[in-house]
Length: 213
Ligand code: GH3
Ligand code: MG
Ligand code: MG
Image 1 (cartoon, helix red, strand yellow):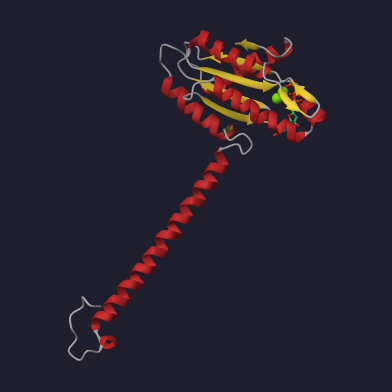
Image 2: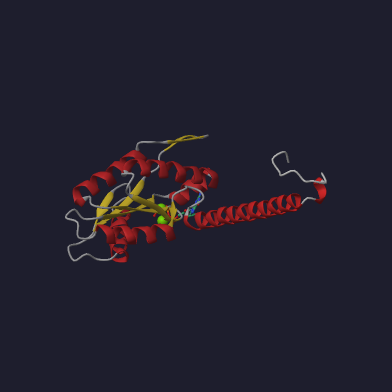
């Protein structure tokens, strides 16, 4: 108020400046309200988008997000001299773990497995939970030998890390199917099908092993 021009009749409330100032304050309040509303809407949208893409138990990509990101990544790395690999991973006899130790421990096994899997691959590789106790990873530019090493590292780290339960340590194993982009560059669905066939082989051969297409 001290900075406002002096009003001759000294009637502050009748001054046009007060009207201007009040109008400005009103505009300011309305703008802030709109900005806050827009921010809240954006946060809600982000939360919904994340919920649609992230598996709530393990915090990694769900099936939809994995398939979407993997298709993009496989395409981006196609033509590279070192091929891209797909790994399908399935926990062995998981139903029996649930049956013997309860669903809550089963959930914990899935979380512990996810941590082990993330540590066995590069941070630039993709990993996702396809559903239940089945997971997939996309390893771009690895080649067969490195992909086998990564798969074997993961298999071993799960097998060698028993999970503490009230009834004592529980040993968990996984079976893995591995497929590589062939020179004729098949698409992701073909790669996943090949990896699934390899996983089936690993299960039939006695589980706790890596097989490749
Ligand atoms: P295999 O070695 O042949 O893979 O046998 P499996 O018992 O692992 O496979 P199966 O498909 O028979 O059983 C999978 C089980 O996984 C059945 C289902 O109840 C359980 N499951 C699926 N999702 C979840 C989950 O989010 N949490 C828990 N605790 N269990 C789950
Ligand atoms: Mg299983
Ligand atoms: Mg399964």
